[in-house]
Length: 229
Length: 229
DNA sequence: CGTCTTTTTGAACAACGTCAAGTGGGGTGG
DNA sequence: CCACCCCACTTGACGTTGTTCAAAAAGACG
Image (cartoon, rainbow over the protein chains, first blue to last red):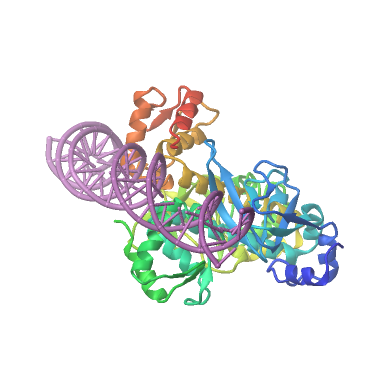
């Protein structure tokens, strides 16, 4: 195994692997390797044969799709300590999205092959896997709902509320504003404008890259008011 | 078991159960029951405890979410012979969407409990399940992409092309136009207008409720041209 | 036929995107 | 230490798409 103790521990903190016996975890991670990615480096492209899934050890990953006119649409942002592309091995097909690094990033690449073997003999792992997937399914459904019936204001306020740990703690955006904007399905300009109104109303404090939500409840109310109709 | 032979056969035509040994299939379907729904009848609501998944024996189901202002957004349309909500049992939680009948509909309600048991002892079923889920995951990702970077015209043309079996065969929309429009994330009015232009250009023929695409390739090209940017 | 619902059509409006010009801050080199 | 540049971000003016509201037309059904 190519991983050290602290890396193992990190992987064990994911819901999927938290209670897997050591022997099986080792079987899965047997061929795992590190991949170090510079800022913006491509990890895989949409359509590439899907042979591995990934754990973000440090940094962040952007999952996106390319439209035929060349513009990119961010589907999801994966941050430190999270896993992604776990599901792809099961169709033996291709990655449905492209992935690149939000900044200097280290991922652990885990070939799906070993995982599939352990999976077949460990019902508990299988169940966890299903749970993880169905959770992601729900997130995507929420995402769809947000895109199709929320205004830009609603999406931004909701996103900020999701980011704020606890509710009023300071936090920083996980990526550049144009990336976050794309994740929200809006342009950087619109994102900037919404943030400006929010700041003007005292609902968001901006100090450099650090954001604070002085009154999360008020922000939530404001978001609801944005509703069109 | 409450199901007759032809019902069993129908269920066996789903990818998930196509190769499951009879004994296990019977174990899963042991407590299955019929549910007959009138036009528009509610099967379950978002937030209801999720105890079962469903097979559409006859008719169709609309999965939707309610916004806080009361408007409904269609997430997916489930037609005859398809299954849905397979995944919910694994989180033991609540349905993330509401479901009602598109027209008079019969579904087979399968308690997830039995399924979970068989699942734990049958790695093959588990693998199929994962495959099914990751396929649905991909569909949702496509859906998200469509909503966030395709114009109304593109979405309609793509949807029509998806519906047309083979390419040029006549077909009818699976639901009323306002339902389909919502599924596409547009208003009925916009849907109607797009269809009107399409008809004017000879790309779609409308005879009552029956649509035909005389030239699928041309329709696809037209859709690509709608691209904004 | 008359009524009710679905669909179509029309016109005005609003939200968001686009294009373009500015602002500001952090890093680099003088 | 300061000046400059570069890049991300902001701000402004304008155009387009799709929504909204309203009303007419077309089906469905008794």
